[in-house]
Image: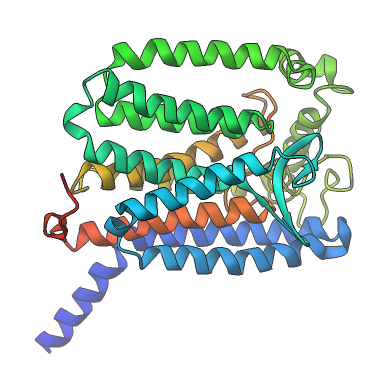
Length: 383
C-alpha cells in the first residue's frame, strides 16, 4: 500500500513539473490556432491553408521534441556554433541575391525550395540565442568591460539586425535587437554602455522608417486611425471592428464577417481579431492569459539555471516567444503601430511555427535538466 502511495506521489510530482504545464499551455494555444484556421480556411483557398498548417505542425512537433532530447551543453561545442552561425549568415545573404531570394509583397525574406518557402530571419532568432548565450557564458567574468562585455556582442547583434533590415523586415530586426540587448542587460553588462547605444539604435531605426514611405505611412496612420480607416489604417480599423462585433461571447465559428476578405492577412498577422470576433472576449483573454502564464512560469524557473549559458538560453527563448506575442496583440488592438508579425502557435506560417516549437523545446529541456539537479560542471564545458 505504501509503495502504491509513493508511486502516485512520484506521478503527481511529474505532473506538476513546470515543463508539463508549459506543454499544456502550448497545446491549448495550438489547438485554438487550428480551430480558428479551420474556420478561416473555408473562405480562403478552399481549406488549403489549414492542410498546410497541419503539415508544418507535424514538422514543428518533430523539431520541438528533438530539441527536448538534446544535451544543451552540446550546443556550445565550437563546431556546432560555427556551423549554425555560417548557415544563418549564408541564408541571410542569399535571400538578398536576385534570383535566389523569393520576393513577396516587396520583401525578400524567403528561400524557395520548390513549393516550400523558408523565412530565414525566423531561424536567425535561434542562432542569436544560442551564439549569444555561449559567448556570455564563456566571458562571464569580463562582461563589465567595454570590449568583451559590450562591443563584441553589440556588434554581433547589430550586424544580424542590419542583415534582417535589408530584406527588409523591420519587425524581426526590432525584436532581435530588443532580445539581444535584454540578454546583455540580464547578464550584467553595464547600463552606461547599453543605454546610449540602445537610444542610438532606436534613433537610427526611426531614420530608417522615415526613409521608407510605406512604413512611415503606417506610423502616421496609426496616430489617427479613424481618419485613415480607408487608407493606411484600413487593416487595423477592420481588426478593431472584429473585436467590437465579437463582444464577450463571439458570433460563433465560421460566422465572422471579417474573414470574408474584409480583413487582409486574417490568417497570419491579424488572426487575433478573428478570434475576438468569432470566439469573443473570453477566448481572446484566454489566449493572452496563456502567453502571460508561459512568461511567469518561465521567469520563475530562471533562478534555477546552473550557469550563465543556460540562463541566457532559456531567457532568450522565453523572450522571443512572449515578446512576439505581445507585439502582435499590441499591433492588432491599436496599441502599437501596424507591423507584420505572427502570433506564436496560432498564426498560419511554417517557419515561425517551427521556430516557436524549437524555443519551447529548449525551455522544456532546460526545466527538466534543472529539476534533475544535473551537475554540469562535470561535463567540462563550464568556464
